[in-house]
Image (cartoon, rainbow, N blue to C red; front, side, top):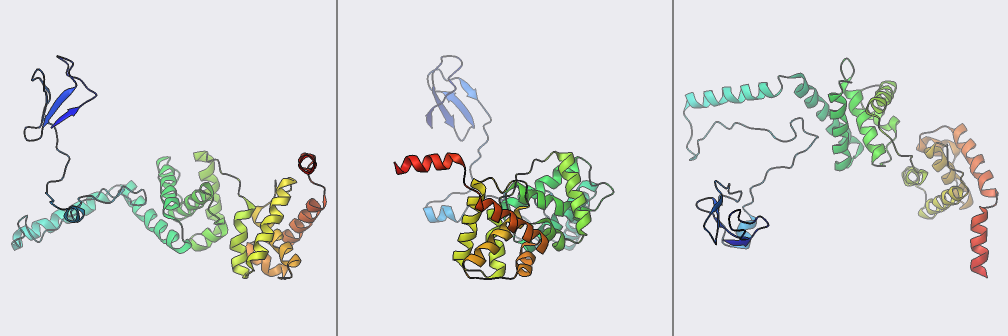
Length: 315
């Protein structure tokens, strides 16, 4: 096979190098120098003569995943048949079963492997229960591995740090999952999960993005079965409040609940403050305070820059 390689022949400088697949050598076609030998063939060991036959014969394993305690790089023993498919005798099967048992014990012999096997099982349970995307789940597993590497879990609860890592991954990827919802699905108390999250954030120096109130509107609206027009109106209220710098320093879920309650009142899709606050995971007092703040912000005139732009456009 003749090819033009970026690496030229070291003797004559010719770029025309020939790869001999059978001998595993790379030879210069001009002077005959063997440039490289013992080349490993990374192709498949089978042949396919049609496109459909080739598609049915891939040889790949699963991709590496942080959500598996061994990242998916595992070995397995199947001691019933040999390479030709013949059934093994009883002595060989007994020996293979012993090897399989020793292999399983060696994987979980260290503290790291046992910890990860328990943690990843709990992460699978939480992710399935809270409908967490796969990418966020991978990120949570990576955060937990960093926590384990920093030796922060010694003497503390594994389940609490799994829930804290999942909450940190959700915040990093801007997935609206409140800490109360995650701690409710966890086996540990809310105070323990929040304490583990604060320790994790401090030691790993994680910088969390600020939550946008608009992403909480759809979740609260779906719980209250609010009309789509009312939901869109609540988002418009939040946009106007943002233009007047009225969203900074406030709880995003409380602001979203207040905007949704205001939109319900204006669109004649009335809901009780108690129900809106419960759907948002906040209190009625917080809802009323955020509602007063939104009303005062929206009653103020807009920024002077916007008025100048609008007057220039009308002229």
